[in-house]
Amino acid sequence: GRLDDVKKKGMDVVKETVEVFRKYELQTAVLGASIRSVRHVEECAIVGADVVTVPFKVLVQMYRHELTDKGIKKFLEDWEKIPK
Image 1: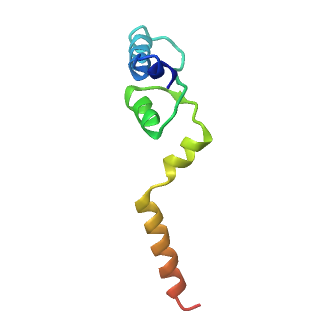
Image 2: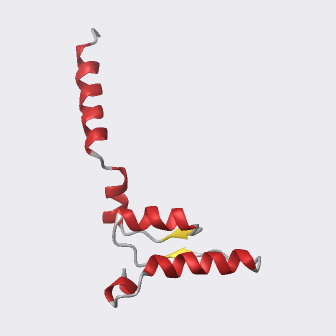
């Protein structure tokens, strides 16, 4: 996030850091930080970050999806139709 603000690609930094640490077999974790979107989390996973700090707002966005919401609604409607 913050690196992107100053016109540097933050994900490139994460990717390059992961590559160097793996190349030299450094026993440390790469942390993705300044996360501002679900896409940032996805990109960190893709480039090999070991862990990310995620704001609560983004965490909620990660499990919210239109199709999930529709599926839950349909499940609950079907559940109510079952004789009890």
